Each structure stands twice: as C-alpha cells, then as structure tokens.
Amino acid sequence: MKTALYNSKYFIGIGVLILLCSSGIGFFMTNKFNKRTERISSDMAISIYQLKANVINSEFRSFIRGLNNSEAIIPQFNSSNEFLQTEKLINTLLLSHPKINHGWYAIAKGKDTVYKKITKIGTAYQHGSIADYQKKWIHSQLITKDSITRIGTVINVKDSMHGLFASRHRLADSSTVILGLDINFKDLQRYLWSVDSTSRASMHIVDEHGYYIISPEEKLIGKRIFREAEGTGLRKLSDSISSYETTKSAYLEIPVYRFYTPLNIGLMKWTMVVETPVFVTDEEVKAIEKYVMIMFIVTTLIILILLEWSHAKWQKQFMLRQLAEVSVARQEKENAVLQLDKLKEKLDPHFLFNSLSSLNGLIQEQPELAKAFVVKLSRVYRYVLDPTPNGLEEVSREVRFASEYFFLLKIRFGDALASLEIDLNEKHSSAYIPFMSVQTLVENAIKHNVVSKLKPLHISIRSEGDGLLVTNNLQLRTDVKDSGKQGLKYLQSIYAHFGDLHLTYGIEDGSYKCFLPLIKKPPTP
Image (cartoon, rainbow, N blue to C red; front, side, top):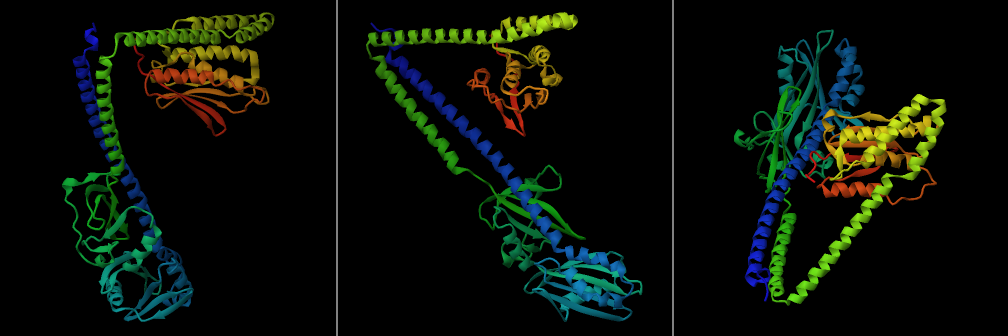
C-alpha cells in the first residue's frame, strides 16, 4: 500500500501550487524588468541629450568666433581710415569659420555712413551692396545711445530666418564701426545635421517669441508654431536649469523625452529643445514573456511527471531514495576531505619552518624583537585554529591578523618587503569578510612576485566603496608553478555561498588588485 506522499491528489495540489508560484514570479520579474528598462531608457536619453546639447553649444560658439577675432584688433585703430586700410585682415578674421560665408561692416562718421557686404567664395572675398533688412537693422543700432558692444537679432526673411550677430565699437575719431555676421539658419540646419548625423536625437531652437530658428523640418524655420509644454509634466534635471517631459514627437511620431535648456547667444535668450526616443526594448520584454511561458509549460510537464511518478512502484522510489542517501554520504565525505585539506593549508609547515629559522637568528642578535616575534607567531596560529562556524570573520580581526602575519614575513625578508599600508574605514571594521581572506592575498603576493632589496614588494590594504581593496605592485616570478588559484577559488566559493557578492581581481596600471566585498551581517550558523 502506498503512503499519502505518493497520492495523485497530493501531487496535483503541489503542481497547482508550483504553477501559481511560477506565475507570480514571472509577473514579478516582468514588472521589475519593465521598471528597470524605463530607468535605463531615461538615463540613456539624458546622456544623449547632454551630448547633443554640448555639440550644439560648441558649434554656436564657433560660428561667432570671427567676431571675437575681429574685436581683438579693433583697439589698434584710431580712425575709420586705419580700419579700412586693414580691410583684408578684417575679412579673414570675421569669416574665419568655414561655414560662415556672409558678413558686413558699417562705418558711421557724422552724417555719413558706409555700408559694405562681404561674401567669401573659396579663399577669395567679394564686396557688394548690403541687403535692405541688414541696412535697416544696422541703422537702428547706429542711432541707439546704449553702450552695449555685442548685439544681435533674428530676422524672418522670405527664404529663411537670418541671424545678425554684430560687434559695435567707438573709435578715437568719434566714428562708429559695426562688424557683423549674417547666418542663414536654413543653411546652418543642414550643416548641423552633418556634424551630428549619427545622433538619435532631434533638435529644435526657438527664440524668445516662439519662432523656430533651427528645426529638422526646414519648412518650419521662421514659423511660429511651437508651443511650450505646460509645467505639469516637466521634471528638473540635476543642474536645476534644464527640464524634460515624456511626450509624443510630432516630427519623429514616436514617444520621446523632450528636454528644454537655455541657449544664450549674446543678449539673445533662446531655448534648445532636444527630443530623444524612448528606448522601449520590446524584443527583450517579449523574450522575458517567452521565458515565462516556457516556465509555465515546464511546470505543467512537471505536474504530469509527478502524477505518473505517483503510480510508480514503491521499489523504484526506494531505490531512488537509496541512491540519494549514497550521494549525500559521498558529498559529506568530499566536504570532510575538503575541510581537512583547508586545515592542512592553514598549518603550512614551510611557513612554520621559515618562521622558526627567522626566530633562531633573532634570539641572540635581537632578543626583544625575538620575544615580539614569538608573541606574533603564537597569535597567528591561535587565530588559525580558532573555530569559524560560518566561514566569516570581522574585518578588524582579519586585518589585524594579516598585519601580524605580515610582521613575521617582514622579519624574514627585511628591506625587500616594504611596510604594509593599511587604510581602513572605521565603518567597515564591524563588517565581515571570508576567514583568512586578507592573509591569503598577502601570501599570494609574496609567493608569486619577486621580493628583493632592488625591487621591494609593496602591499596595501584599504577601504574602497563597499569593500576592501588589496593591492601589490606587479613583478612576477618566473620560477613559480601555477597553483591553480586554490586560494581565490576558496574565496569565490565563500562569497557564492553568502549571496550575490562576487570577488573581483586582476591587473590594472602595473599592479595586481583584488576587491573583497563586505558582508554586512553573517547568517546564523
């Protein structure tokens, strides 16, 4: 007669429970994954926006660099005649940017005003009549009484929006000189697109009156169809100046993060609007859903297998149980052998032999140091033999043990071994790390590296982040055979046992570094 354990109804109940648990886990994982995806998408969007904004800011600064270059030599002129004598130099400085080909200057002395348009064609410069919209604005700036040097405006001309950027100066002969650039924003948009063609973001620039200055849709440049979003959906970035919202882009026709940031060119206060796509990883989400579905199918198969298993003969179950008991016994034996091997490694006879040899040399020459040596040696072996039921020890005790172990090594190697550097954060003292982990790393450093007076070995132990970083300068020995990294494997197995913490190690900047994550609270043995 079969026991209740093998009753079909019992296993049907277990199968249903497993199915419900698996479903709950699946939905929980999908929900967490979606939240994580949204956070990653937001972080990526902010990074792309920052890169785009930096590129555009840098380009606009370079567009008006010709004004900066020209302003540098204006103080050298005492009269308008001196200015006209260096016309070629002015042309070169003013139109120094390869994509800025149109400029002008005006000289007003008394009631006479000279206007001249400058056009760059290749490496040559041509002069011509100034446009009416340019002349009208320049005249308004000549008669104004303010003393502002850098001036500018945006004018809607029939073919595009034009930016007039100028620098106004008063010469010693009472004449007024205005140097300026005329930038066609439609041509500028094409250039900016080529500068940052690989970016996943689209960019608009709007003046303070709501007119498009720059837009990926050229037909919008000069038109006032942009409406700023209402503040209810805006969120501030860390710089407290820029803000962003999640909306649907009329240009991209997809959900985007829309960023608003000021772009100030001279006295003109514009707004740069950068739109980056919301990176929805549909394929990854669908993959998770597929895995969840597979889990459901597997769970159903398990239920069917359990139902079939419930009708199997008791003899088969007995044999399986016996095999399981044999497997457990074998595993316990292997664990006992492993613990014995670890104990043998802790009681390294070579280390004891070398320590006694060092002690023998100290007894007659430095008896006081010999006494300290004996005390340290006894503490080292007492620490080694202390029971550690959960395989962990406090950081403070581990570091103190490592320093005492290092003291014995220092006696042996002398100046070939530099002093041990310890920089321990007090907050880390009460945390836990694997038993003898720091000593293992110190021992590995001595074992695998050259230790000589010409090449002293430097070892440091310091707190970093949420763990300890043990470092030594790299000067590998060629006569040491591969040890199979048993010490590191031991530490990795301890960390694997206590959760998701991982030991990391490797070579960086000519040093060998090993990071030991802290375990805040050891589990009850």
